[in-house]
Length: 272
Length: 97
Image (cartoon, rainbow over all chains, first blue to last red; front, top):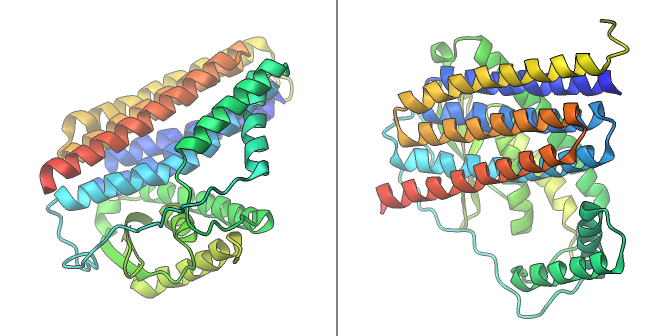
């Protein structure tokens, strides 16, 4: 176990170092974000997961898994916000810029009037709480119930919630993981070769045809982990995703990748 | 040192080497934070420094066998995220509106 953990940790270390080299070497601000969001998050995840395997400790590995889940949720968000801030405040001129002069509007999600009580979500949240404390007393369960109640109170529920299909979610996760590995290999390649020689940045706009805002969110996050692209804006009406690409090869290439993602994301949220 | 049978001291050395390497990588990020040029470059660099710090603390869990270090790592990663989002929003608000 120790050796396996060591190998996983070493891979994480390599990705972390790669990301630091990218942030140092890449020529423009958004290019540096590509290195920071894609490689640093996977690097940290592998280090904490590897530590759990190396110590043969389910507790450490569990918190490591939690860290990993958290990072894959937060990394695209910080990449998105930083990318947008950089685009709006920067003076960069692109050969192709779909956002220039484009009207953007925030993606509106209708709040629902009714509550959508779900017993599985309640039990799941309580279980997470109890597992985190690893204390199976009644008090621990009650504490979990209280925290779950607080989460449910502050959570904004969405009109016509769609049940999540677990099988489709697993398929999406597999695709996401494969994209993550491809994208990190790409960052490694960019760091190893002088990027400034063949960089051809562009802002590409792609119309999304997904059925729900939830699916649009999944697609936007996954595009950040697609090689060479970083989501910088998701505009509401019409639903358009703007992404920054390192090597512009026309919009058609990204379009086919996004079509595949849209199908996978739509399958996750079942139709009512 | 035989590879399939790592002992206590090998884990100890491995974790130390990992942490030193992460520290050296953080120096590159520090250099970027100083050089800039734009404020977003500095945010990216500071975010990365925090993530590297979290990795260093998380690696310590392998040596100590204690979950406390993993918990610290998750908190540092969270702080990095919240800080980055906050400053990114601030920069946008200050320069655009």
